[in-house]
Length: 280
Ligand SMILES: C[S@@+](CC[C@H](N)C(=O)[O-])C[C@H]1O[C@@H](n2cnc3c(N)ncnc32)[C@H](O)[C@@H]1O
Image 1 (spheres, rainbow, N blue to C red):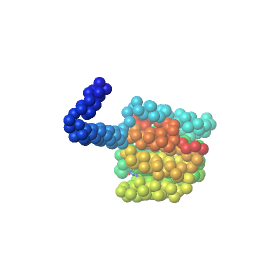
Image 2 (cartoon, rainbow, N blue to C red; image 1 turned 45 degrees about the horizontal axis):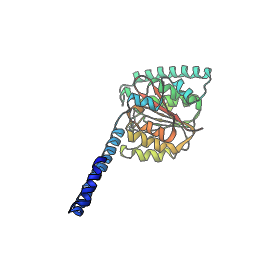
Image 3 (cartoon, helix red, strand yellow; image 1 turned 90 degrees about the vertical axis):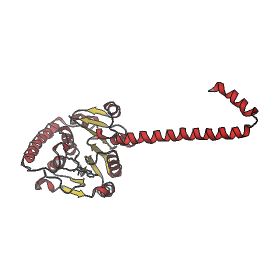
Image 4 (cartoon, protein in one colour; image 1 turned 90 degrees about the horizontal axis):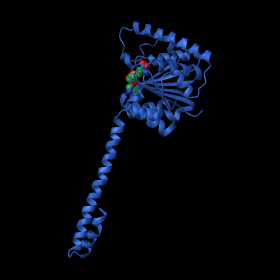
């Protein structure tokens, strides 16, 4: 390109219609510039759309979170010390809870949500252990369905004899696995799908400091990111955030990078749960 410049300049200087020519060249130049710029803008919009609509690949997940495969390792990564006797006790309790849940699944003639919507085993154990260890006052859950995670959360609160669970959903017909004995510490907030984001933001910020937030509702980028943004000001010091199905969108990774930093990914058998905690 450089080698053409002197000859272009010579034409500009000595051409009889040089002013006309310069005008035309500047118009062409402006058009080229505009095209390049709009191309760049389109490329940015396009990659943005792709980012919001795409699932991160395994390589990208590995680059963004520290991956572990069991609940105990999550606690260690969060630097939450656990006494061995306590851990064994919680594991026994959790095994009993799983048996009880199996019986309840068998008793239910029909379930309102598919079975594979429930959280996986290690995510359940993580929620149970976080509640037993942290003795939270306020736990928030987004996404109830049949209530697998809800029963786990409420059973841990019941074992602590302390704290309450606020669950949020867009459907009234949720929680078929729950029994009256668990409902004492439970408040279910239901709002219509079209106002889900704003209703969640208003309601969650009326609860007082949230000690544990578990997200398992809208797994789209916008759904996960908006709920994390909404709950962020309500989180108390040392609060833990657990998000199911983070492999479905970039939201958790983007949020953790922008607002927190280090995050952990708990991989069980088919999906990834993201975890981080706020400064204590
Ligand atoms: C994957 S299921 C939850 C499974 C449950 N945590 C369990 O372990 O059994 C998702 C639930 O989120 C609810 N949901 C979907 N979008 C929502 C939203 N924007 N806000 C609140 N709940 C939502 C659905 O109605 C459904 O009950």
